[in-house]
Amino acid sequence: MTTLREGDPAPDLTLPLDDGTSFTLSDHRGHTVVLFFYPEDDSGGCVDENIEFSERADQFAAAGARLVGISPDSVESHIRFRRKYGLKLPLAADPDRLAIEAYGLWQLKKLYGREFMGLIRTSFIVDAEGKIARIIRATRIKGHAQKVLEAVQAG
Image (cartoon, rainbow, N blue to C red; front, side):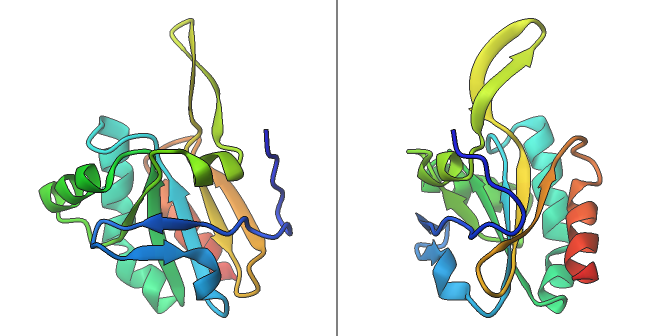
């Protein structure tokens, strides 16, 4: 399992977006990029998280940050999800978990005594040089987007 730390080079990734284009992290050198990884489209906590990030999309842009949501769902799922909730941010599809695993987020989880593999909800702030400036685990879904925004604004 990959263990990334702040200051490490961010693993490059190229993923398809829900608008028919693709996102390559290295194409955004010179700008701050926020990658927020979430488990599943249209599930309770993920809806709340995506809405909170979407509501702050203009503030992330004003702070000079590109915002991208990543989950293992398909592009088609992302398209439906984005339309249903009017989300104002691009969603990247990673059904093969290439980026998810490169960032060390596919891990053993426990819920109600049951163990299973799943995505650990986490946001990465990647600086203009392509290094990981901050890693912020979503210990609480509500308020996570605001916490990430404040970290971006603080530089």
